Length: 381
Image (tube, rainbow, N blue to C red):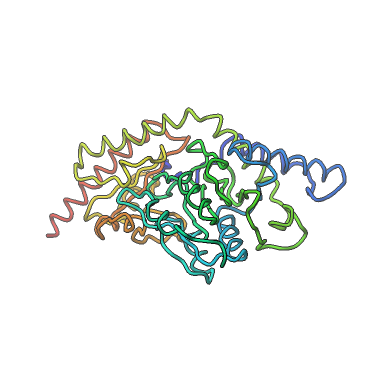
């Protein structure tokens, strides 16, 4: 049986979410219909909206449901462009859903650098925005709440203050933060905040963009006027119900953060005993409690992923959102990693289903596989 350690890619659907999905599927009704079945569906939709908003310190009316984090991020970026954004400043460690949208926007893109720990350089940002005015259109700044590869948590609240003072628009991809830290949308000062259900134990194919009251938004999908015209199309009611149930379960289980932190740190300690040359990326920064990004020179990421899979452990090399492709991590390159280290990065991400035994078994398997790889290399040379 495979031990699943790739929860940053997607996590197991929580029982509460599964029950909510099945319950919503058992009752027909379109939330836009005015008959009793439609009104019941509308009630499910709005209760879910309220539950999610309450969990992230937002207003229910500001939650716009989407097909996932990618659509939510795209809606934010392109809405800012439609509002006249003249420049997009995107952090060097953003997810491809943000980076690719910015590059496809036709608007000038600048990169917000990070330091060797993967934390955004806010001095650079403040200096860049100093003296900026919105005369020719606002600048959009995109800074993720937590990195999907390293788990490094970004100073979004401080960045939000800088952007707001400069009259810019602020966009936060909070997909990885939801359910892993206590996230506060209001405190971030973000105009746009993106979330995804399947990272927190909800179903795949549903997410949300939370809009500040003064955030300009231009729909990318038009039609029947659902979601107040901000994202048209019949809402995925079962998915949304599962999304809300997963978020509520994750919030109720906040004490799991400490347990996941111990799994993370225990794994690192155990591996270091047998591999003192281990590099853990972002280790001294504030990180998600469940995430380890490690590397050792000379052992390619793709070989490690295969070796761990054969040993019964599902892990990944960086982001899992690249159609199964393994490529050198641009996140680690932005942090100053050598080509050899960037090419040998492995991501281990724990979740609510994992135990200390899983962590210890993985560490043993990784050390065993590395020792075998070193023997093979020594024989070949």
